[in-house]
Image 1: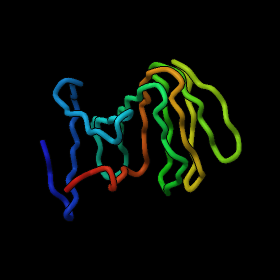
Image 2: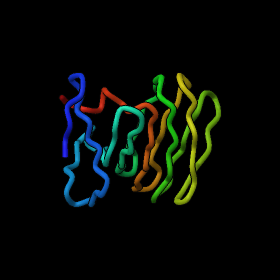
Image 3: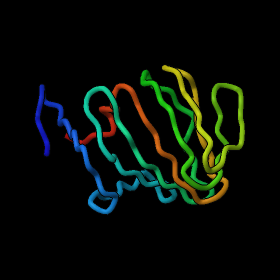
Image 4: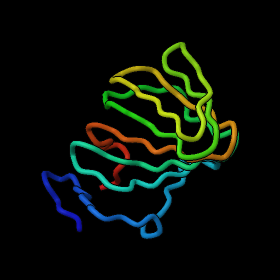
Length: 121
């Protein structure tokens, strides 16, 4: 179900199966699925091929990410650490961060508020 509120699509799916959602290709080594969201929160599944790079960037959103599979070198400000399946990282607002995929893997990203720039209206 989609509800339009103030020119922003509100996805608000309560029960989501992975196979009902399409992948969006970000670049040749990265693709993502926006699993569900409303204006306050968004969950995004991001699949990386080895060598894929989430370039250093920052945004005003809070972000917490779960490494569902694979291995990644995660950098937050000037600190880097290799994280693998089961690990988590937290990004406060406006903190510079990025990722390099060391083994094919999947990150589950949660944003507050939702990333309007990820939604094509």
